[in-house]
Length: 317
Image (spheres, rainbow, N blue to C red):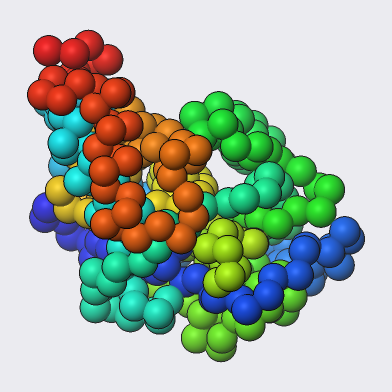
């Protein structure tokens, strides 16, 4: 991909920033109010908005940020689905959850949520009311879709949230340090800095925290720049929320998929939906290794697609 802008993955560390807990306490029943956020569109925010508008335009010009979710030019087989799932669910890009520009391919055990995912949506006060309403609608609908796919309870909720999604301007994001530290115990200074001062090449991020004893997620925080154009903002919602469910890696081989650094697809694809369905199938268990999961994933993928058939627009061929 060639573009006049430095392009990196939607999330610098995605779900790989997992902070292992020897014992996870349940989320508090009440959440302290977040710090007051900036209320004006500053020159810095205007500059970021202009930059991201150019980035989106360049990506669209190159035929990227596609919104077709089951394209004819990207068929896949049960074997392909199996390998993509294992690469994306059983590896992480950043060893030990450390923020780094050099990605790795470190094997991990299978992770997913055990308890209902309750997402609290937070906007910076510089975000216009119309954008807030539109984004809230998109997030609510998408969470309902993810819940249907996985069979796991996932929804917008202000009742003891365990996932906080911030959509905020560059000025707003700079003030989020105390809130992030309160919500993710053990957050390091570097991890906090990566969220509050994202460089322009990092389009959005999510931090997840897992219970080491059970290999299940306990809480998460995602940050999306409010300055993104509508499609890039929606793409961030799709990738960060889906990835935080237990698909922490990206793979260049995954196509069609949003779990790929090339930004070809903006929205959750059919293959991504099948990977999420596999991830939350009762036949798999948190803590499984790749070797333990492989035969189960192969069986599930074959039942979904058939051993040698490819899927194209939902039709086996």
